[in-house]
Image (cartoon, rainbow, N blue to C red; front, side, top):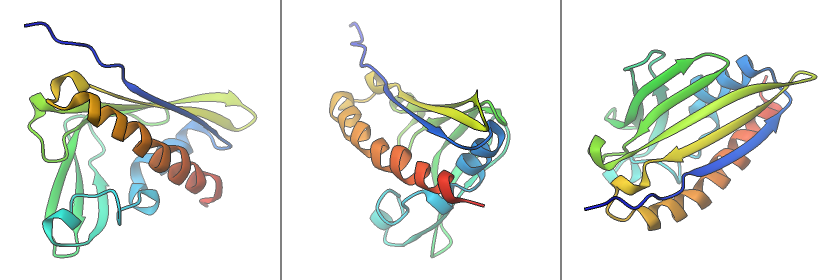
Length: 156
């Protein structure tokens, strides 16, 4: 049985920040810009999402914490290169073999700005990969291109 390849979701923005600062905001201040009220596992598990934490090393975990103290596993860190690249499995309750990956790169472009590219791949491992890809294509527009970009533009 052959696997049908499904194109990754690719989103690119430019922010007036150094690559190191943009990385810090994306990875270590995620719960300040991520729309936890609408894009989280906690609500479907009967609680409110209050935080997201990233273990700052390859093999670390990315977890969401609910108001009731429970943690929900988003994925595992695949690459942790401050100021350059962050990658993780994108599981959100799925088994690893049926999940994807998200990779974010940070490229200096001069004048204190950087280009940030997010690539979400692995759709062919999911039973409903085509539908999931389309949903995330829209979702990453709101989460990355709008919420993160706005936060990066104004964060101190």
